[in-house]
Length: 219
Ligand SMILES: *Cc1c(COP(=O)(O)O)cnc(C)c1O
Image 1 (cartoon, rainbow, N blue to C red):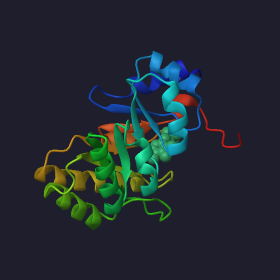
Image 2 (image 1 turned 45 degrees about the horizontal axis):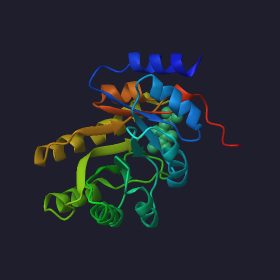
Image 3 (image 1 turned 90 degrees about the horizontal axis):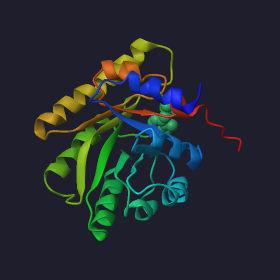
Image 4 (image 1 turned 180 degrees about the horizontal axis):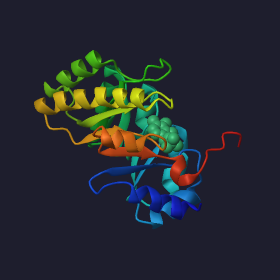
């Protein structure tokens, strides 16, 4: 299928209020331009360097989301333009984003990335850590941050029950924090599991290969 058909197929599966983050990592600027042409404005990348190479070549009204692990020493490069950092996995990183956002006179949207997968290869906060950081945020420690929600990745498995359990764990935390301060975004689900994520309450999904095709890491 073409990128256009893929994009339509995905859009048709997303009920209206659900945000699509088109994950363009490893794909060329030309492919992003094509999807931009269909009206898509929110794109996700997972590496700072790749984002820095591509973003200047693309329209200014793209809302860039960083979805990959971010080192504190790289925050300064993206702070001038990044819309949302979905992968905040430590208080130290949050403090750095707050500082760099301040230097740029901006407020940066962030999601706390929570570890919900049984696999322990993935980055992310433990639930208790996420609650602690959220409390610090509520106390006003990060004035240049808008904490818009939570992000999580389920285990890479065919076991739908397990994936469902993991997503529901994050939904429960989302509901709990949402009572303390209204949150906008629950980012869960990728190409293979976004329908399950939506059933579990996701209102933002991060879809890459189902739009752009398989990633070729050999290049
Ligand atoms: C690559 C990536 C995605 C998209 O994965 P696909 O399976 O290609 O849809 C989503 N979220 C994160 C954090 C990623 O790194």
